[in-house]
Amino acid sequence: MFESIAEKIGNVFRNIRGLGKLSEQNIGEALSEIRTALLSADVNFFVVNNFIQRVKDKCIGTIVIQNITPEQQFVKVIFDELVQLLGSDSMSISTSKRPLKILMVGLHGSGKTTSTAKLAYFLKNKANFTSPLTIGCDIYRPAAIDQLEILARQVAVDCYVDRDGREAARIALSGLRYAENNGHDLILFDTAGRLQIDEYLIDEIKNITAGIQPDEILLVADGALGQEAANIAKQFHTAVPLTGIILTKLDGDSRAGAALSMKEVTGVPIRYMGTGEKIEAFEIFHPERIAQRILGMGDVLSLVEKAQEQISEKEAKELEKKLKKGKFDMNDFLGQVQSIKKMGSMESLVKHIPGMHSLNVNSDANDKLKRAEAIIYSMTAKERANPNIIDGSRRLRIAKGSGLSVQEVNLLLKNFKQMQAMMKKMKSSRFDLASLLGR
Image (tube, rainbow, N blue to C red; front, side, top):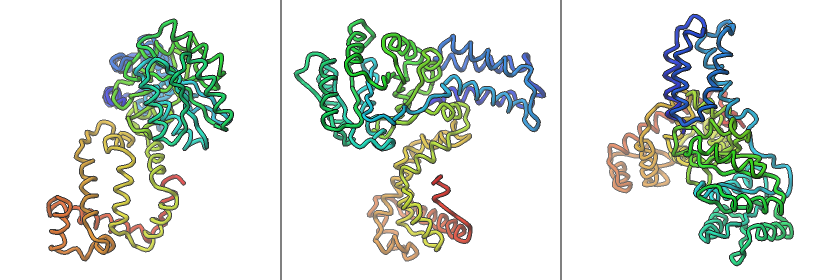
């Protein structure tokens, strides 16, 4: 996500190093290159022009702060304007109301049904909703009902469907009554989509809206559509009062046009984004963090949050105690490997680290984690607890058990000893893993 535009803007910043001051002449070429980068990322033409003009107005004549180079000042202006463009007020929806009614709308193929389940799962785990309910209001595509039921089971939430229903608005109203009678505190309505916006689709959404009076109307938009996604959002917003947007399929699109056009064109904030096929691949849209990614500054906060999700406070404190005692065995090493795997692919993780967005991390990095797991699983309980007893014959047995070579077993043991030595050095220092993870 955003790799292409990040690389091009990064080149622009490298080319303006050493400027004595910011002037119309010396930033002209840089702004021209940024304009080209944005347009090639499929950002709306008028959005690009307005963005470039605002940057230009702020840069020219600006007094450079002491100890800040003109290049840094230029980057700051770009960053501030990107945040504004993405929607400085964009955050998760308000979740204080119970029950909370959310209407999901969008075109066919945008990922609406999947996003309904993802949002239910996300709010259940992040906003303390105890009894979410998804309601299938797509009367045209039977597979949509089946899909919603399957996804609802996967995320352990209830699902209301009416396979004999012929009016989406009536199904929505019946589902709402069911939710109220059964104490559901979060209600998500999955509606039908079309290949394109038509009068019938809009009328149906208006009827559903009038009947259920939703607290939130979220448009699910395919991020890969670029500026066309922004135009679609504008049409939906004209028909019904959208309160937010969910951008999907951002894991497969490196251009970023939709994200950079949506808020400016529609005035509707992007609330969430889908970053992969897994149910967990769903995040709050943070404009500042996205701007940091685009400018190659990384996104350490999101990386820390991913770590927190995989390492509980109890686990962190237990590991901290072991480290303070100088004990770190192969079981702990295995736990670290598994936590990293759960956080996502190595390719996605390095994108969150400042200066690493352009690093080409291939699938071999993920394979190494899998091979490490296989080797450790082939060890006995005694060998995991005390790797020092692993001699030549044991290494040969472990290699055969894992289906790997003795050389790979030797390399893992070498890496483990290096990590163990590092942990022992931390023993005497004031090391608090829980604090490191932001707890």
